[in-house]
Amino acid sequence: MNFLLKFKSCTEYVVLPIWYLLDRFVKKKPSYWGFPVHFSDSTKFIENPRAVFEHIKKDVTLKKILFYRDSHNGFEIDDTVNYELVQLHSFRGLYLLMQCKVLFVSNAISWDFTLRWNNDTKYSIIRMDMQSRHVVNLWHGIPLKQILSLWNTDLRDRYNKISYRKYERENYSMIPASSKVDGYVMAAVFHPIDPKKVIPLGLPKNDFLLKTDVELPSYILNQLIKIRELKKSKKLILYAPTHRQTDAVKDAAYYNFSKEDIRSLKDFLKNNNAILGVRMHYLRKGVNRFPAEQLIDNEFIFDLGNRLIPEIAPCIIESDIIITDYSSLYLDAVYLNKPVFSFAYDLEHYSKHQDGLIYDMDFAFPGPIVKEFKKLIEALNKEIHNFNQCEAEKYKMIREMFFDTIDANNALRLIEKLKSELKIV
Image (tube, rainbow, N blue to C red; front, top):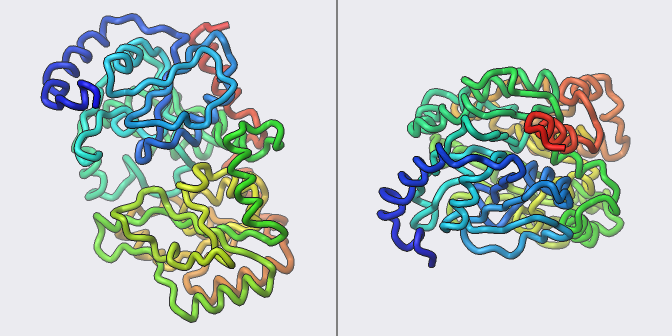
């Protein structure tokens, strides 16, 4: 155990205050670009930050620094130059962090760059100077739910107990959005940010969706291969519901499948030469399995969770149909012209008592929205025999609304914008 982790009080009341002062005077290096591991699972380096990293990993002009928290397994990083993997909870880590001109976050500094104590139940935020840096928030998806500044009062007050979080939102140098429409929403979500800092450059992680096998980094390709080995010649239906506020909101719950649900689901899969991949949200509370995970039998229903397949892109690429509820991953599917279904069994409760929704589902969701499992199976049966959802005008309209550009150059646009602002040739 290193010194900073071993002596919490010394770090909290001596090391971090000194670092805080030094950070305001140490000159930042424009070529030093820092990346975080995933805020809730420090064994993962994924999503938008990973997509940016993969695009610049052979750029000799940039020093790429990946700050990990606990132990690491190398994160399957290969063919990288001018790169350092360093523990955030170390003097070396804090020294390099102090020098980074560019920092990427996928959620927030107060989540991604924290010193964790007591198995993550306590933490210390590294309150860094954002005025001297380019801190880019690579939010992990297109906001559909009322989050951050748009949360309902109880959840918003709970989150904003830490005053630094408002300072953060006000001082990000850039937030890439997927479209002008998404940009307006992102500006509201991240209030009080200057809306001009929310720029429709596209989401870097969507690059993975359109690359060929030979263009993909090996760690994404390896995940694709795992899914193909499960799928074989069958159709793959992905079930990936969003997070429920089960620890904060009364009666918030994941769907419990009845015996009749399970029977009809397996009959549907068997009759259509299909399998179901279950991918629950990474915010897992406790050790208990989600109800949907209890269905996994490795015959008709398989595990496609974050522990096996860290990235969502391979799941979307290999899926023939995607079932979710209010998760923005359906828009990843729309990016690839895949049919989507919303199993919205708790729509009223979710809208009124949990996160809530920014858009009316009937307006923003291109496929069927069903509240009963029986109706879901009926809708799936209709689509799997025709596959015509993506040709509908509504589907095309939503695709155009949420994506200004559909290509594999989202990370490139972001990097070019940053280099231009920093005058890096």
